[in-house]
Length: 212
Image 1: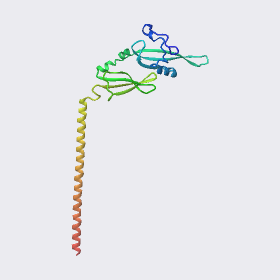
Image 2 (image 1 turned 90 degrees about the vertical axis):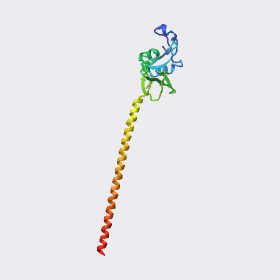
Image 3 (image 1 turned 45 degrees about the horizontal axis):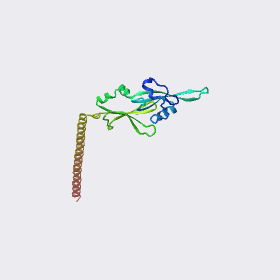
Image 4 (image 1 turned 135 degrees about the vertical axis):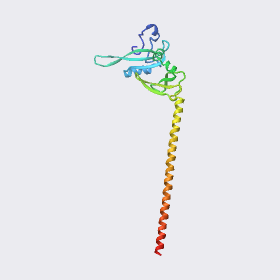
């Protein structure tokens, strides 16, 4: 795509409709195309509806020419079309649903930060999903996954509840035993204090009697 305009395609039969498409002006593609041109880095765009039919992602590889003085000038792009259906099939995402998992792949709009869903299972729920950030050329895609029945089964929840109740009961018993012991020690201390006071009073009475 010299100057960003597609001029040569392969195979021709499947991609002829893309000839003449200006990547730097097309509303759906110009953000990533401009980013690739300005950064000089391999950049992924999409997925979106392809002009040649179907859904796909584009990989922009910016090409530069270098003058005798060493100055680099943007020439255009080499673009790889990634057929989305083939990609989903290749990474076997459908098997996640068969195994009882829900998933969603999404990214943020380069300019607005808005969430753009790339692919998701038929019944994806965001609660309790594990999120992994994946670096892709000049962008970040986010992969979220969650088991259909949650990360913890009801058997595990029940077992956890039983353990929590048991620990709670043991803690309550230990607290009760500690308080009872404290109470017994306090009563014993009070009894000793009374005995000592009575002994002192008896001794004082005896002393006064003998003095008198």
